[in-house]
Length: 302
Image (tube, rainbow, N blue to C red):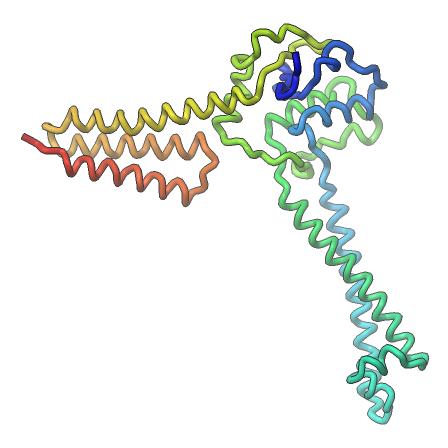
């Protein structure tokens, strides 16, 4: 049976690992170290965790910045000397004519052009480094659960995958980045982390050499999240309407209390189980409360 679309989950580590039937039955023989650890990272997108090297990056940018600052001073010195010698016709023409600046054969003009070429190259490198650094800053840190399981697979407390100085590669949590974006909502992540065993495919009986691995279609988790979200939405709306109808002949304070209760529950569900932003939570909660207010206003009290 094809394994396409299935992922293998390590019960002990809590990670989801893609695998093929061939890999399950005949895992490749590799030396422990870079080969096995690279395979571990390659098999699970959540395991794509690497060191950011923030201090090295900051120092490199500082060096580039200072180098450009020094080149800027040299260019300003050229300009200052040209401004002092008002009788230098060649300098005045080079200041306003590109052709004269680019073709002049004087030693001073050649030095200025060499400086200009160096500035162009260095400032290009500097700007590219700034852009790359901003992109690295946009990467998120690994989730605590993923990092815990990653470190366990790395073997820091037992036999580390890498030795010598590399044993401490992942010690500083603040200096790590996760390349895989966290594109799932909180409900999906909760189902995946705590209830993955419920979605195991019944006909998948194969086991790998690593104890505690099993297969499940990842789309089952997505479908389960969709069903739960739909049920919660229906319960919150229908439950609120039924409750308001039940107390329609009672005091207005009780109806307001029910409205406040269901509105708070709705806001909590949206805020805790989805990745909705604060503005989206406010708007959806306001729309939900408005529906209930309109319903209360249309209730006829005998």
